[in-house]
Amino acid sequence: MSKSTPNESVSSLSRWVEFFAVFAMFFMTLGVIIPIAGVNGLRLWGGPNGTDAVMTVPGEVDFAVDFGDPLPKFTSDDGTVSVFGQAPVELAAPTITNVAYLDPTASQRVIWILWQVAGPLLGLAIAWPIRQMARSTRTGDPFTSSNERRLWRIAAFVAAGGIGYSLVAGFAQMLLIQRSAASDLFVVNSTISFAPIAAGVVIAALASVWRIGVGMREELDATI
Image 1: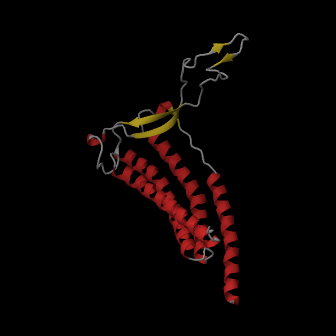
Image 2 (image 1 turned 30 degrees about the horizontal axis):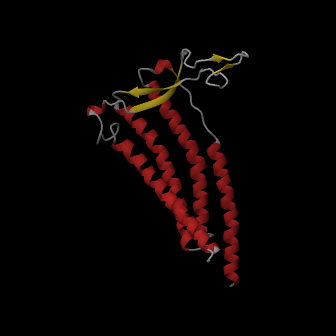
């Protein structure tokens, strides 16, 4: 029974990484094309005059919502209250609901499209160097200066791009809600996640380790 060599295992892994990178790039490309070509963009499909309620923006409402009592409570013989056999819970704020734009203006469509395509474009910018790294690993030595630069590029896109996307998403959501007829009914706020910075730092650390591997490879080649 033959066993796969380490090189064959690495080649197989890199082939799968390249496959998933290409797979992700395909769907990211659709994520760019569909909003632009859809009813809120070039209107290549959709309802007449863009009147379908396809443009929605989630937001936190600024008024109390009465949920009533949708969860039936049961009291057992020993006085324990339960909901379907579990401890009771309550539905409370914050309440997130969608603003559906039945006939968005041109400026609202532009803001919405920029918001929708920002994430897929960032995903493409990250998936492309990952695909290049996987392909170079499958066809040759992974410890190259090119792959090191790709890692630094990925770290920058994850950190700066992730923060930038959260700013774009928050600002677009704020503008769209403020420019709607329901602006007085919503709490306009935005939050920034620092998780992309943490992820970018981890990838940058990997790039630093990769730099060591590149140096060792160059020294080895120089001694041969």
